[in-house]
Every structure is written in C-alpha cells, then in structure tokens.
Length: 455
Ligand code: 5AD
Ligand code: SF4
Image 1 (cartoon, protein in one colour):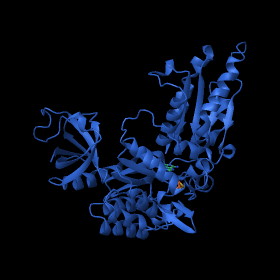
Image 2 (cartoon, rainbow, N blue to C red):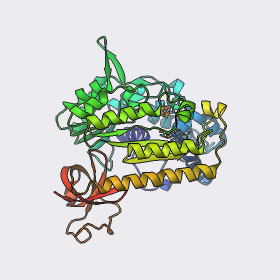
Image 3 (tube, rainbow, N blue to C red):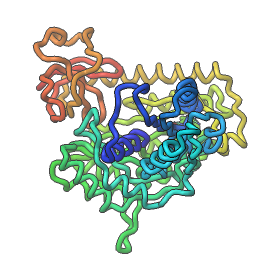
C-alpha cells in the first residue's frame, strides 16, 4: 500500500513539474513515506529525519514532509521534536501534497528575513476530503517505475478488523471499498499503457464489498469483471484475511485463467489461544479448511503467510503449534516478525509484552529455518516442470553459483521473473524479454529461487 502511495505521489508531483534528483543533497523537497506497523520501521525514519538536522541549521531552503501512517500516529509531536520537518500528513491527505508543499514553500520565500518555515503543517485523517484519494487513484499518471508492466491497484482503504496488536485500523481508518467501475477504469488505463499484471490491494482484500443497483459486489465479482479486459494477462490480490472467509475468490482463482494461483493469507500464529488474544476471529481448523479448499480447487496453488513471534503470553507450545502449521500448509514463503508493541492498540493497553527479546529472536529464527526447509523441499520437487514466467528484467545478483549447466557461461545474461504462483525464477535470456510472459523449464532450486531454462 505504501509503495502504491509513493508511486501516486511521485507521479502527481512529476505531472506538476517536479523532477526527481539523484541525491538527497540536491533535493529541495524531501518526502518520507512512513510505516507504523512496527517500532523498527519508525526508528529508521526518525534516524533519516535526524540526519537532516545539520542541513536545516544552515539551509532553510528545503521542505521536509513526513507522510503516511507514522505521520498520522505521531502528528504534531513530529513537528515539536524535529524543527527540520515542515509537513506532517496522513495517508488520506496525500492527494493534495503538492498544495501543502506550495503553502510551506511560499510562506518561506515570502519572508526571507525570517528564513524560517513557520507555516508548518499538520493534516491528519479527519481533515481529509473523502473523495481526494479517489481522484489521485483514478487519474494516476505513472512515474518511471522499475517494472512498467506490473502495477498495484487499490480496491479498498483502511481496515475494520482491529487485530489487537495492529496499528493499521488506527492510522488508515475504517474499511471502504472503491466503486468497481473506478477500479475497472484504472485497470484499463494501466493496461493501455502496457501493464500486464495487476495486483489488487487491500488490508483485508477479500472483504471487498460494494453495493450497486441493490446488489452487493464482492472480490470474486470484481475479478470476473476485470478478467475480461483485453491485454491484461495476470491478476493477483493481496492480502487475504482468514476470518469469515468467502470462498468465491478461490472459485474465481480456479475458473479464471488470468487470476494467479497464489494466496497470501496471514495466519499470524498456529495457536488458537494466541489467535483469540490477537482478536483474529478464526481458529486454526477454520484456517486449514480454507487452505484445503484452495488446494482442492486450484491445482498448483501456492501460499504465503505472515507470522508474529513472541506475542504477549506466547508459550513454547504456542510457538510449536506455529511451526506445525507451517509444516502442514507448506507455504511458499513466510513473512515473520518479532512482536512490537504499538501504542494505542488493545494489546498495548491490555496484554503485557512479556516474551523476552532473545526468546522472540530465537523463535523467529526457528520459524524461518522451518520455512526454509519446507521451501527447499517443495522447490526441489518442481524440477522438470514448466511454468509461464513474467520476466521482470536482469537479475540484480546473478546466481553464478547456480548448478544449472551452462548458466554462468551462456551468451545471454540472467533474467529474473515470477510464475503465477509467485515463485522467483532465474534463467538466461536476452534482456529484451523483459515484460514478456515466457515458458521456462525448472532445472534446479534453492529455498528462495528456482533456476530454469527457456522451454
Ligand atoms: N508487531 C509485529 N508484527 C506486526 N504486524 C502487524 N502488527 C505487528 C506488530 N505490532 C505484522 C503482521 C502483519 C504484517 C503486515 O505485519 O504479521 O500481517
Ligand atoms: Fe492489521 Fe488485522 Fe487489519 Fe491486517 S487485518 S491490517 S493485521 S488489523
């Protein structure tokens, strides 16, 4: 979601004549789009902001804006603690960031004596124009991006789930689904500009619901509608929420060729006790029902998961249950994090952060080791299979050590791409293949990467 927001902001500013520069020293406008989901993400931004203190002491000629979830969470406090910050604005206000920059900037140039940005601005969610973001999404003009043939499209904003540990509902506000026609028009525009793969975004994307003509449209309906768009080759949706799961999106995955066989569905824990404390509204038995249904309906479906290690009260048994779940589901990959207390959440108020950091660290390492083993075994089984791969471009870190015969000394460079199931594939081919979907035969694998040759 943040990547999309950044792209929209950059595209909008470029439209208005702003140019990106190569280094921060050259910039007269500096934007940090921030995440609040863990303390670590916030600490990184605070370090970056602190690094601009020196420059601010002798140079008042730049505007520093902190945008996104951390801006919403900390608000005014960021201005108080950091005189170098001129704008603090929430995710809902990015549609008019250019106005805010103008305001901050004009104030300064109109008062050269002061050499001080005293028109410092805080704009939080409650001040946002509800239609503002819709305008930004709908009329997006893409800046130069690394992969012009892939794009994110937001279908929902906010989240109503209030998982007890999570800051997102507090900073991104209530769940709202975008009108299907607006999503459709945006996808058509992107496809007209060469996009082949669209990833639909929502914090709990499978809860998409939009009432039109007395009928409630769901994510499944939206997938069917978008599937007809000529020139669109692949559709994905992330992230799915396992509570109160409507299987229509899995049926769409089974029936529609363009919908990729990939389900990113965070479990967060393998223990029902933890899930209850996390306010997740499902049990592991219910989670496994969804997994089993997807396996039954969608051949070659792959799963990705998220886990939190060391949430309040997590015992060795709870942790062991998480490892068991990983072995049962056999995820393609997992994103795992140490629990980080977020002020203002239910967990911060009600549940002590009682798992010592070393234990969180140890459990995280164990979880990743189990996942690595699962990935390695499952990837090894893919040898000999053929997949359609959307080529992203040159592999940034050529896998010279790959055991694939001829790979290191091929006349072609190593390319990187992804299967429909989101497996990363490296193979040799001309750079001009970037953006094409080609068939690749898998020859070898590591836990993170498949190695192949053009079929
Ligand atoms: N601490 C650690 N991880 C968290 N996540 C969300 N909130 C927290 C937190 N307070 C993780 C969840 C979520 C992912 C985006 O971040 O696993 O799925
Ligand atoms: Fe946070 Fe839960 Fe919403 Fe995901 S579903 S964004 S973890 S509150």
